[in-house]
Length: 145
Image 1 (cartoon, rainbow, N blue to C red):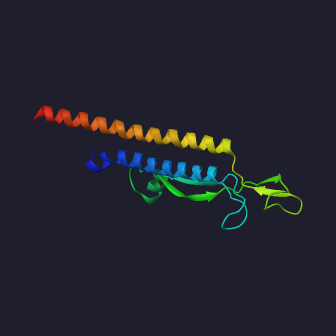
Image 2: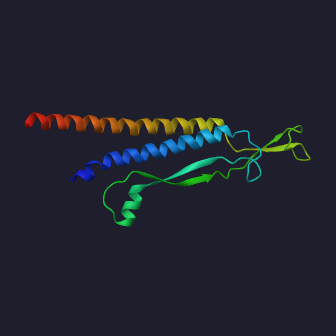
């Protein structure tokens, strides 16, 4: 095993940390816009979600050996139907008093946030364990000389 492959474990965990951080940011953005009925594009806010692809799939398809972590493919809008709420006093209400609200569901966002947070913690813990193992290996090597 080469030195580059030894550090690939840190690359995998780092890609997971970056991906989960982005996922937490998207969830926070969804929660912040849970009641936004007007966006720059027009219409109510649509929930966004991060799309991941395993780097292993890319490695197999591209003929690259080894594992590579996770890649963020993009951020997509959730095309689930919007909620219609009767609120005739709302500035964006239609002639029948119905307002189209964002398709953000706070319980779903909280589950996504918890999942992303736990995944972030798991990646961080794997980095900490790798660091401890490297320190112990260096300590053993120092003892040999």
